[in-house]
Image (tube, rainbow, N blue to C red; front, side):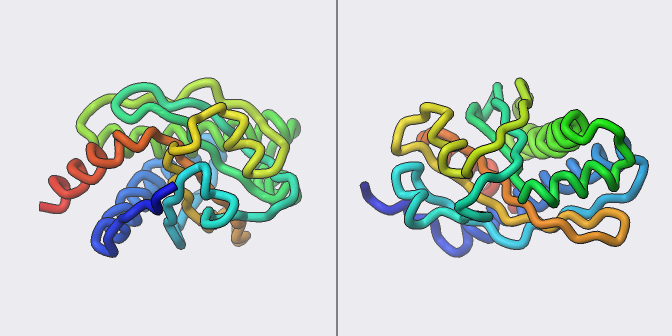
Length: 193
């Protein structure tokens, strides 16, 4: 499979895009958790699903706790956020919940919905995050479990989530068909200019 060619300028634009989308997620998280939450996008990487095992960005090769769902609209695909299970449990406790699993799914849903709203704003077309569910398996198994074709693009972001004096590490993976890369890059170029 040919490697994906994205210029440094495009990677910077993608980083800004994901950072702005994550900022929308911050507001949604603060609303439901009752405390200020900051999300910092530390790194963005893009690979094909076929090459994810070699070039993708991993949190760990072990099992992770993740929230995954679909994006419908201008850039259809799958989107998730994954954390080490201990950190996911800590995040739920910091939000003050009595039901950690429900809380992790709720927090993940709000974060990913906020990111999707950010996509809508940049693309100028509606996008909606749907069907959020808890998934506990390796990141690669989670991505392959979508049954996406091997040429599907995987945009991975490494996130730092600051909440109540705790810094949590997470990754988010966006899976989209290659044909949407041109649309996304055009929208980002228009937004910059």
